[in-house]
Image 1: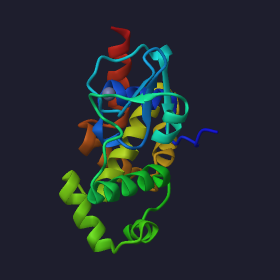
Image 2 (image 1 turned 30 degrees about the vertical axis):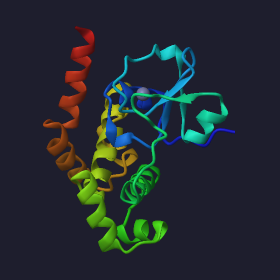
Image 3 (image 1 turned 135 degrees about the vertical axis):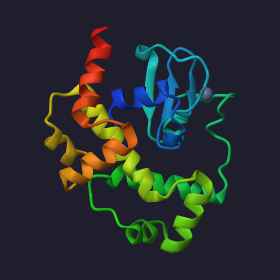
Image 4 (image 1 turned 180 degrees about the vertical axis):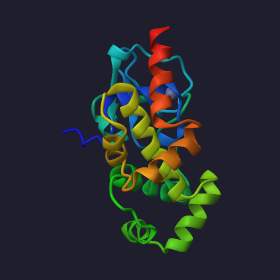
Length: 191
Ligand SMILES: [Zn+2]
């Protein structure tokens, strides 16, 4: 059985179109026609949407008969530091709706909060909290583009507990308000 995915098919599809390396290790793209699986950030030519399947774990893609892509090498060994980064990132993607505390993540992966934050920052250039904001704002942006939910509903669904904080972070990462973002994206689509 396939593991439960925290991201929808559409969300994962957008990540692979954007070659978003922040989601590497979170899921794998398998292409039915070539029987190859890739990291989200793979720069090979994009498959047709209809030929794509997503797997949470590499082992599931392999069991389903897919081979690792030679270009992005999803099966290459990760360093212990990168394993830590991926564990932290997975935890954040799975728990972004909750009030996530650094101590909880550190406890979950069995290291000290100080060590965890230092390694994470060194490997990715951002702190776990900055990554969490990115995941939440990605989720909000997706809901703004694809649903007619209100800003307030989206605020809570993206894991924010106060609208003012949501607006502030959204503006910092996207350069506009949620309403402006929705309007631009709809105008872009209409063009
Ligand atoms: Zn690839």
